[in-house]
Length: 223
Length: 223
DNA sequence: GGCGTTAGGTAAACAGCGTTACCTAAGCGC
DNA sequence: GCGCTTAGGTAACGCTGTTTACCTAACGCC
Image (cartoon, chains in turn green, brown, cyan, orange):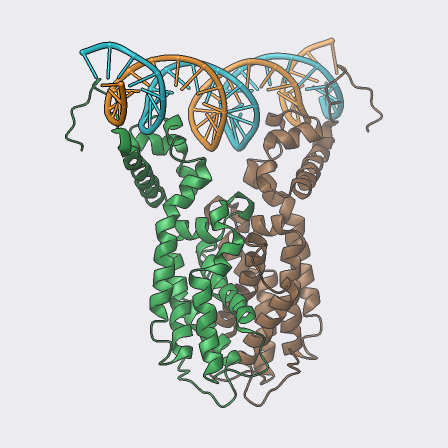
């Protein structure tokens, strides 16, 4: 790869002073590849990652505090992608907040089933093992969740929803639960006899939205 | 415990011929206790269980094929309890199918958060690692899921629901996803700023039911 | 151009894990 | 009492995440 001739032949050519970050990225890339190939978090062991990169296991710890840190740095770009996908789904909220919510739900489930192993790490992991920067509270503060809240609020402001509903934040938590339920169930119980995931997601959103809408708001519920 | 004097002093008194099952049960009890005390599946190691029972680790394998088998035998009684709880929740379906569904949802989430670690093993584990007898398909065939389907069907037969809905089975999958979402999110993200779990469950069921009900059916939606 | 500093590794080891192969002692039927 | 069966124990394999100790190549500096 590197044009540099290996010094001691057989060992990895030592990185330049500032190039430690390159190995950092290579480790993440190797872990990502391993995760996608094996389809299991368990297969992504420190030693397996180190082998693939061409270094020894302890070298990993010079760039990551522990395994969880590594896994979540792998998911970091997917977290960013997640936020972007969600934001894109509600791009034209102003046009129709209800349609935006529908799109949001579909996009959420699609994201989850596209690569389930990442979703597992991101949203189904043990919270006491996840790094602080991905703590439970953080999700509420920034990213996709506020997007969801804002979209719901837009629907409320537009007068589309019933007026006996709790604040947008509380509804958002339940909406998240709904799509997370469809997604995580699809991930953990793939062999369960049911309609295609997309259909389940559509039905879930349709019914729930109908529960939110005012009586006289029919939307375009051609479920 | 046993009145028998230990033979070789220090080692566990050998079980009588037919009493091998006693150790089987003791192992399950020890694993259960360990699971409840530590609150983490990871802490329930074969060696830890063996230590608590007073035998060596390989002895476990005379009674259980592997660790997963042990864990799911621990959960076996909880599966039975789960089915019973769900059945009890819909005890008087005939009186009011909609109220039964509400009760079902609440009971489901309550069951999950009562002891989250069991719920994790039962419904959030990797499906390829779960024993065959707890395979995805099995859930659809017997136990709580058919109960849910039947309850929904009762609602349909009673003419309470809209008539443009898919079959009861398909709705059931989505309802399961809804309550599973509330439950699993409560389990994995306990620190997320939100209303109490029971309130979230109630809101989720209320909105979803409203989406299922006919226009003219107000139920007693005093959410 | 030699030199201390330091970033970027390696080798060896620790403690724990699930699991297997083998052995041994206790109990029962005959 | 013999022998088979059953219920365990011993020792070990291969793996895991992680730590410690060490080494050495690369750099800034005088």
